[in-house]
Image (cartoon, rainbow, N blue to C red; front, side, top):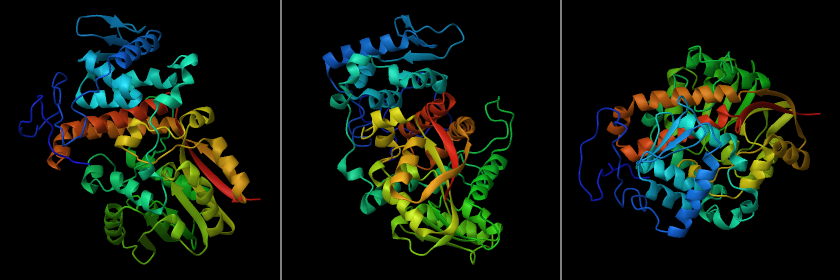
Length: 436
């Protein structure tokens, strides 16, 4: 992904980087070439009219307000409800009509719409995701939806490229908003579902790490395999418990920083970080742990993923899995669809349901879920903290070479996910899998 500075006008002109967050009325206009195809909305009048009709019908009963430049308002929200401001309605509906939810995200990226409360606007939509399109039109979903490109399938080659596109963006980028543990997954706040009490993020992340290590029974003398290294935080914590750890990642950037952090902690003899696919690991381990990596595996590879874990786990061992989940019916309805998240953030990914995890393990392994812990509302708070910190660091992000369109893209990604967890459309679980 290019990180060139976007244009603010229809023509390509150079501009200096902003040192503070842009005012709400400043509209980035990405140049062709930097973000191919994004600057000009698709021209399809019929689809735009249909999209406008469906959109207005969908938002009219929701607790939000939609405002048009001419002063027109739609939505059932009152004075205190979140506001979706349409800046360029024609372009907005053209994008929505051409690409559905991909178009919604792209319209935000280029400034066709705006809001002072992005998660608040997206939340009511997420809560009614399955009902936004009238039932008689649901049958046309497969015709309209884009399908996952064959280049993003998570075979050995595709997985490396998919991981590279996100996790190799820049270690410095992730350091602008993550805490000292460098945990890029849900924290575990003590007061879940309550107003944010200001609990330190590092404390909440360490509680999460300890929670999954406990479920995997990691302690003194344990041999541990971690699938998905992150930046080494979990491996360091496991080694501090007395375990020896092999941790594998497909991100060269992550391995580089993880190695440095492990060395700084004086744990180089206890932890090995490999640039390796989980399917290439051999040996057996007392415990296997994997935190929010299964979402990148791909539905067709779930049997192989769990079979691999099963084969690597010693008798009596435990698999500690932290996974984002979604309702089973929504997983089935969206499987194979190509979303905004796929296109811009996590190519090749799919979120499982708890039912799918049970079914795959029943059919393909000797493993069963024996303990579980639900953390979904902690993830909403985690994402809200990340988003607040990221936006406060916009000047530093731009100094790294990322343009305003990228900043808006990342803003939408974090706000979109926060809304999903806050409404329980998405959830996250810590699971312990063992053998009977």
